[in-house]
Figure 1: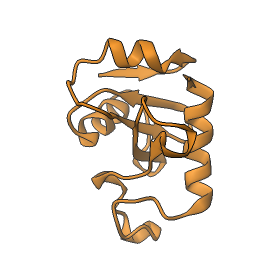
Figure 2: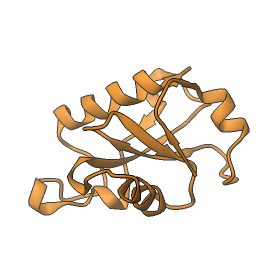
Figure 3: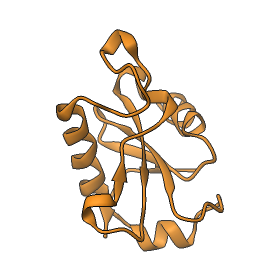
Figure 4: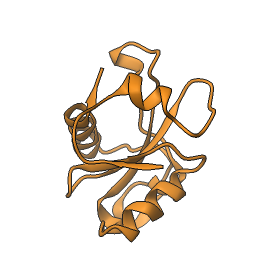
Amino acid sequence: MKIVKSRESIKILWENRETQTNDLLKIVVDLDRQIMAVDAEMHADLEELLLENGSDQKDLWGANLYPGENADNFIEYTSFINIRPADGNRGMEVTDSDIRKKITDVINKLIQR
């Protein structure tokens, strides 16, 4: 697991990952701090890492990156940590277009494709 605070290559992150997933890299994005945690078996582990390092729960959203895919399929906005009925997100997928855009903006800021 790793916290990404500055721009990094997806190729380097993928080649140095500890988890051996076939096609995806799990991430949790902190929308307020503009950072993200990457590379764990579960989004909850990444969420915990960020919480231990000063993030607030309300700012954390899970997603998956697919390094081998084109831009349209690179990000999947799905994670169990996204189930937040109190915040209007009742399922695993982030449905609010504003939150999705913010997630995408942080990823684009931190990940070089």
